[in-house]
Length: 330
Image (cartoon, rainbow, N blue to C red; front, side, top):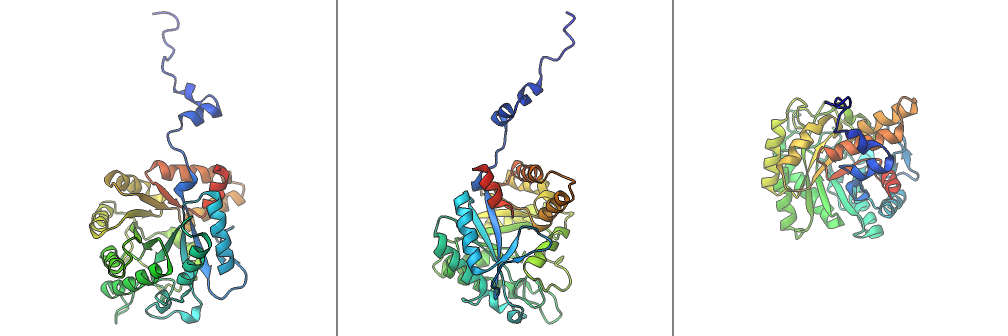
């Protein structure tokens, strides 16, 4: 043995020596087409309303939503997920505004479709929580519990009016049993066979939804633990996955993203359909708040979180930074 024999022959650091080297050997890369922009449109406002808990995010007017859609297209963002925020006076027990052809979400879908056509994949939140006076994702029974099957009837109606408005993909987020199958049947029976379903397959009951409830003006009373998944459970997600695929889901989603990367990775390993993850409001708010305090580097934290979500298996990432990140990538 020579005097040099104790030095390592394999040196992984050789591939980390310069930015160009690290870029060349990177195993995962973000692309604008990976990104989907969630956007809120509020009825009855003349100017965008900033969200206190989500700096940089607003409740759009119809005009500013159209501009945001154009900006997303120009940046190369793949899609936009629309959430409607009706006037409080229009909320009721069954979420009537959610199935009104002239309800705010249906109007917004038509606006965006007219503005950008097929250049942006237009997605819609298919859920009742924005439109009910109790804030739950379904219809309540006489004892105040969410009635699964009565809610499915409302979801079928929502699917039809959203498809009629021109949406490309519906995103049923209520976590009702059988929702994908009922929505698929409703779409097919009304001539909307080409409208896709992005199933919220693993949507957990999470503490990180807080800022979102400001964004949609939630009227929630109680919690959603009887229909959203328990954060302790992984195998349950695989059961939900099997059911959604059997019922006709075209794509599947894990929500939230960062606290559930293990779930995301497991689902991505199991399927041959596209997999999405939603980097939700609380995840966004944590980064923005810590960056405002000077505790972290904002841009690096955004990049790291998105890269981690993609590395875990997401082909599509819903993130409120979608347009900003896409612009920087381009």
